[in-house]
Image (tube, rainbow, N blue to C red; front, top):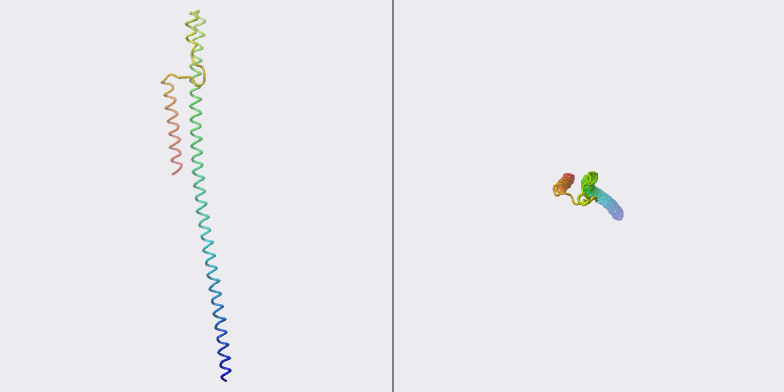
Length: 152
């Protein structure tokens, strides 16, 4: 009987150890699953943060590009306006020269009228040049303000 009790006790101990191993394995599996879920969640959060950083960088680049485009348009308009004023002055000078010549005025006097600069980057009278400079500066400032409001 004593052997039977020992056998029964040994079987109970084996069953208890098996149950303990099964519980330990389940706990380990649960810890592993939780760690995997936590890692997946962290990877998801990191990916979202990276997407946000990339989106912000793209938005900033787009704002910078729009600013550069705006300033380029202002500069092209400034150059075109300057050239237009130069051409208008050159045209008036040529007209005055032709009128002078047609009236039979002294050739030396008429030649003085012809001496104007007809290039697109001529020297304009101060008032005209200052007006164009001021207009361009206002345009560039507007570009800057639009850019700043786009970054907010």
